[in-house]
Length: 173
Image 1 (tube, rainbow, N blue to C red):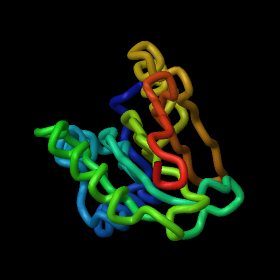
Image 2: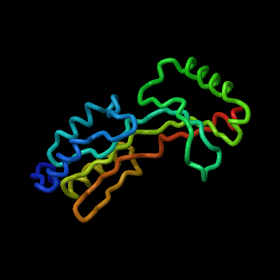
Image 3: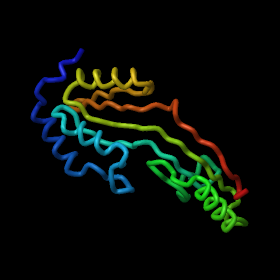
Image 4: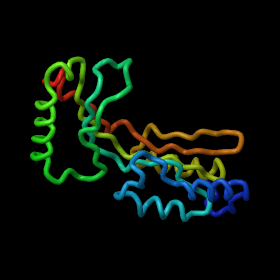
């Protein structure tokens, strides 16, 4: 097992300070509430810093049905927590689709997305990254991995096993 108590190199600590100074650069503008305590705890550890994360989300996206056209579109729902009233939410989605039916929905696809937790972190060394990877894989995050650069060691914790993408409407129907 990796020596998880070793001292972090100064170069890593300088990068960590810089990363923590601008921790959340996501469009949402904040860390996901369900994992904020975990992220704070992880970032308190001397030899690791989180670089991006998502607690998992449920989303409904309305955009082009052409997979080659990834521009535009609209998030009808994006939640990182439990949807409190799914019946009401479904009614609102249906109302939105009905109010936008016609010419402007031709060639569109409305999709339900369930996306699992993901975490990217920089580690002070490969030993710690390997330890984190082992723990993640034991917890079921099979598609996790490590990226080794000249100066950086990154661990990605993720799984596709809990991902779901379901078409809800084509051309607004």
